[in-house]
Image (cartoon, rainbow, N blue to C red; front, side):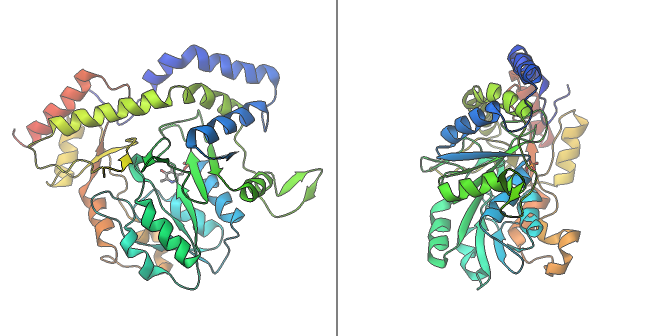
Length: 368
Ligand SMILES: *Cc1c(COP(=O)(O)O)cnc(C)c1O
């Protein structure tokens, strides 16, 4: 049997006629950039994330970049984030000329450890980017308290966490700004690159709308240096079709996670830890096999089950950040997680047969 880490074809089958119709409507209208469709999507996403405003941009990376630009983050500033994330969380900081400062993770949730943040704050620190990794929110209350105390802004990286909740609050609604990604493999994926910023702050909302069109409100008059970063109407149309299904898809992911949790019991595997205040959305179901990771992963891959480590090299040890002078051992929990964890397939369309097969093969690896 062959089971990929993600297979979007099954999802397309279910929504094919709606998606095709929606795309055709945009092509017929020939309105491709900044039109009605995007405006409707922005309203729907803002409502879904329980925020007042949303601004569509070209990618999740851009969502973080324009967020930092809107906050006025600039060269010489420092922004605190986690090294155990996709590169873009820190790249966005570097792209506005600021310096990412990495804080280690809590080894149970794999998200930034709030207890370690305070010691990394300097006079230059301007913001924190908590990354809601794998679809589960960071422990936000202590992060918000630290930000208040030190007058720091918060940009939530919600690329993996649309629909997740922390103490009843939706991911993206707790910081000053939240950056979403609609990269095709994300829990709400477009048919190309796309992203969005959500916020409750009217001033930031107005600034973001200007920033994404070259710092202009129109008329070839430029108020600030912006960029060209829009979410196009074809992508917006696809996303509007898919948004109607998001809650049932997220519930299906949780159901797969429960199945794994039950069926991996008794094995020396650490399954995802979910604090009682969190609603997880399982963008990834990440396990710690407590065995030789390479042997574990190659056994699964030989059995036809695709598995991956997200992420194999923590950002403080990336070549491009050598100038920041981190060394091995500096952020040990992130380093350990990068060597000891892997994701197994968890997408909504996985069927019982595939899931049984995955569990059976994992048990076989341990001889159980
Ligand atoms: C995917 C991702 C991004 C970037 O999103 P893109 O749409 O690919 O630019 C940023 N942060 C995290 C944590 C991600 O997983």
